[in-house]
Image 1: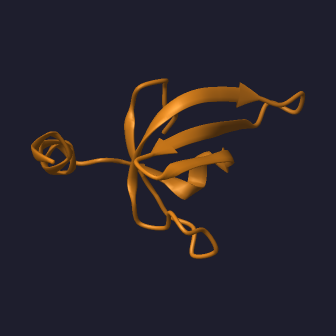
Image 2: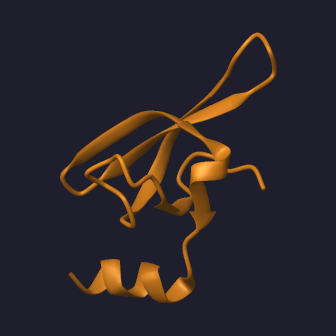
Length: 69
């Protein structure tokens, strides 16, 4: 599944301080090999160069929780 800018996603990378957090895609980048990586913005920072397989679409429930905060 590919993502576009402004999509809400859950980031899964056990080596990142943002593991398990929901963020927003702020940029997509395609390498010369056709691989797409993403920049994800979180409340406390951002993660760049994120591969598609480290992301999953956020549930509507996750978005509702973010709106309430």
